[in-house]
Length: 318
Ligand SMILES: Cc1cc2nc3c(=O)[nH]c(=O)nc-3n(C[C@H](O)[C@H](O)[C@H](O)COP(=O)(O)OP(=O)(O)OC[C@H]3O[C@@H](n4cnc5c(N)ncnc54)[C@H](O)[C@@H]3O)c2cc1C
Image 1 (tube, rainbow, N blue to C red):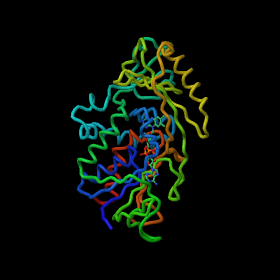
Image 2: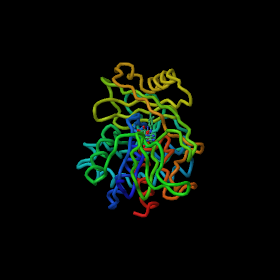
Image 3: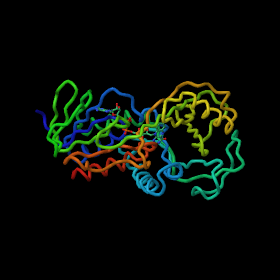
């Protein structure tokens, strides 16, 4: 049986980030991922701890998000020669529209052209990255760091009731590993309660005016992307509610009326791995030794990926 230092189940932004950090610290890593849809591929890619802490998760999420944001410059630079060009990585601030005064840190600024709002605030240092560029960059970096990859679904663990010693793939292959990491997104798990929350969003092209920065109101966000589209999001659906996207669209077009002059060129659909308290689950399993959970990143897996990667590699002792 092949033997690794770490086996990671799940190839979204969290699994890839974890595998990359461990491989860069010298561990022999295998990542097993099925072909299942990834929330990571549907995400807007905003890096906005202040806004997200208002939404859910409070001070604890603000601390995690701020700590992870501080790692993002280095993380992005380790993935791309020119992160702005290659990943559409931006940290030029995010514009808050219609939030209560003093809800967010920042300075009043001019309301952007074409936006219907009485006041605007620039929240400095926050920004975005494009997950459609980030994920392939992470995959390339993992390969360059020597990570092995297996296509398939992890159906069980090697080991006994006390200790994980690897993963079993559907089809029967076993991969022995000193540490196993579950980064399986919103998939139901025995080890932790997941609260799946579906999110849908749109990409709009051909707009007469494109905002320079991400715009956020309490209900919607609009992220300009380097490919000339505007990402408009997003629904939060506990049950399947496709019509919820109409509400997002209406609210976004009240905020930016020229949106209706564009054309919808892409629809995004992903299931966020939510948790009851809105906080990620990044810890050793309480049931089995050598099993680490990297789950529940909810609305912030892209933002939190560098911090989770570091915490998991520390927990594994690499
Ligand atoms: C519309 C939308 C907008 C979002 N916007 C943002 C944003 O702006 N900023 C931000 O930070 N976050 C955002 N998010 C949240 C972010 O996408 C998630 O937090 C993040 O993608 C979670 O990553 P993950 O790797 O845990 O899960 P995923 O990306 O879902 O990856 C998990 C993978 O594991 C696979 N898998 C499951 N079970 C197994 C198994 N047994 N064996 C092998 N593989 C398995 C799944 O098929 C999947 O491919 C958004 C999400 C949505 C839906």
